[in-house]
Figure 1 (cartoon, rainbow, N blue to C red):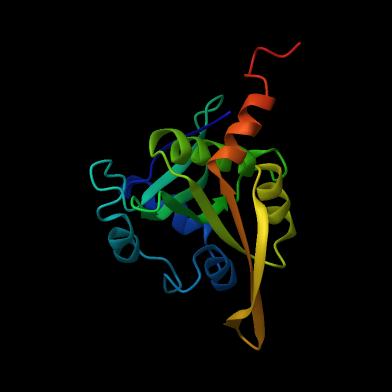
Figure 2 (cartoon, rainbow, N blue to C red):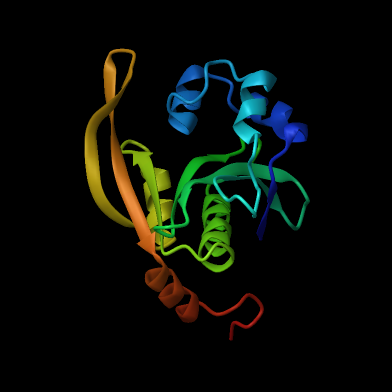
Length: 187
């Protein structure tokens, strides 16, 4: 099971170790950071984050409850209280973590719970590069729907990357919750 905990300056070193090449950094953060990641760059990233009285952005580390190990990073930003909307950004499963163990799904589901239950959002969106098939599959399993493709939005070297836009509404999320038995209550 995955638990989200606030990402703090104590977590900078691990994130910098995970994001160890320029392409991965661009996939993870777009043009938000310069490579290599630095403590100074990450310091402004967390300024004002995780403030429930002024919810603009929530930045988390994902901790596997069984082991206590940090296994990923995820954030929910672009929060509009007026529109009751937010956007999942910067999703990363740690390098030391075995892939395909459901960690991404656990992180996304935990963040959806925060967004829809704690923050009372109506809509949560995200963008994912079209070549990231594993992430797209993860988001679909979490209830997101593909809403469109922004073609050639990012240039990396001589290549252009297209962005798949996805979203989930609170009613869709609630319907999924009622269809899934609580852990420990399975027949």
